[in-house]
Image (tube, rainbow, N blue to C red; front, side, top):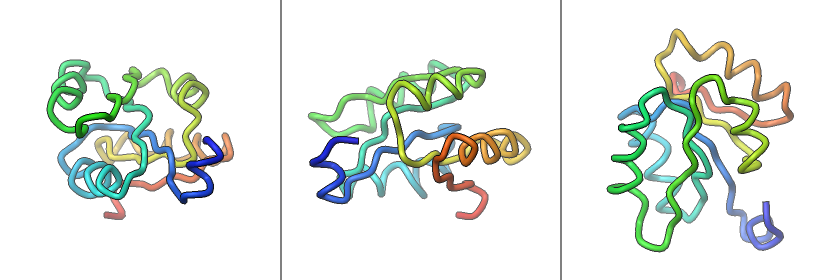
Length: 112
């Protein structure tokens, strides 16, 4: 995270699962308040590409895409502070356990 982002309270997030619930409950509100969606882990590359072309407002870089097996790379590359888990509920456990093990906060989408 940059010094400006830290000082301004901006946060860097990554999203596991680009679901409707994840978009409406997390991604859109975070973008609106000026936080950064730095990466998306989702098995459907086409869904992420459609998101990249329609959701991030002008001037915002689209988030990097990661396949479901790329959790460690997703955490290393964009260096998020928080992992949002909005994949299907039965897939949450691995990510919810892995995020704190990497010293990251996580938000399981099933709490939304």
